[in-house]
Length: 173
Image (cartoon, rainbow, N blue to C red):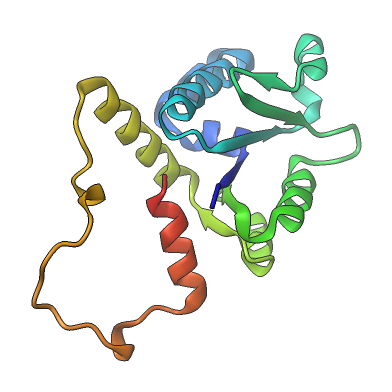
């Protein structure tokens, strides 16, 4: 099953330590740095990625361009916030979506629609780790398959169905 990662662009930029410094210098620098990082991640993982920004700060050249380096970019229209655009996409994609935001309103709505959610900070750590390990040639040990263990599992330790689905999608990152 393919994952559609829907990212609250400015939320991720402003929660990131490295991207927020660029954003404070120039908002366009922050957006470009985010897109560059996501493009490197997309080369490795091949997930469908949509980044949603508020349209009030949209540069005139990018409003017409909806894809950059394979990443779909959406700017909200005037009178519409990025939050409503993200909610519409999450409602349409349902279980296929993974919403990246630290905004509780968006996270709660996406979870109610069946989409998985991850905080901006946790997502940034994941993509940084994946890109770093790819450049250094490090192989992920968790993808080897079954690991023998004597640890017992049972219904008392089982997560809820929603949390298990969420965990599966986050593992794919």
